[in-house]
Image (cartoon, rainbow, N blue to C red; front, side, top):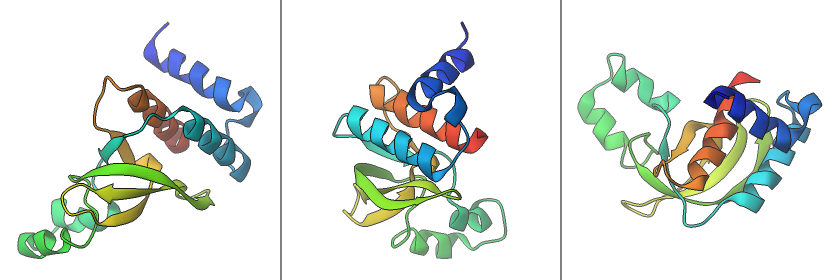
Length: 138
């Protein structure tokens, strides 16, 4: 069995075959599963650039302005500690999590689907990665 098939089976085990569509109900079920399974401490970083960063990375944004904004805004290059889930759940952003940036202890609320666990050998890595793949693809 390849990794994609194994991942799909893990996701179906969490949500059931008939509940794979992203909805309030499936997001709530996935949140409960992650809350019951995640091991702390759990450090995360951005899966890819955050929407506000795109103009600076791919566009004409000023590099000095980008460096200044990264002091107050969350960046995909930062490392965060996953603290807890936020109460927000919506079909557009999915599960929202409270994180604390390690470099300066600033706290942010970010979509879990935008994050990845820093250690690939951690069981948390598979847990968060499976969620992100499900959320983006369903």
